[in-house]
Picture 1: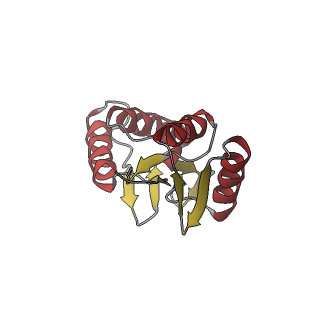
Picture 2: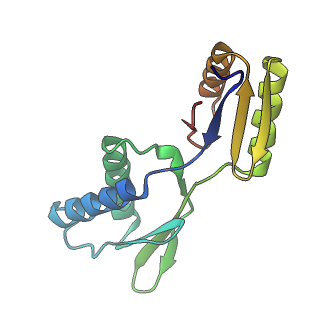
Length: 163
């Protein structure tokens, strides 16, 4: 039996689920009567989305559809960082949506400090854009998970490699 247990805390999303969500959004926008002629384009890049549409009103409707479809496909809405809409040529509006992936150094340090202050029996190490939490007892690790789930953070957290 192992003398120490550990798990990793990461902030990630399933890219294929995001692609499927965007396909559903495009299909919905093409079928809805109020959005059908808006010539809405949704482009997926590595860590961002670009939504281009006819007006602010249709942009709001497309964003609502995106949120609904993402929720149905179990994607956290915290992965979306909506930037302010910008006007582009021809009375069209464009909005950049950055995708949050990985823990920033500041957030990792903040979480590490919180865990160390609250739970003395665990060790926390920052590994790039994730945290490794190690402890002698599985109960201590369960407490760490509950503490992290109770935090109100701007990024979604997942727990992996539970050993």
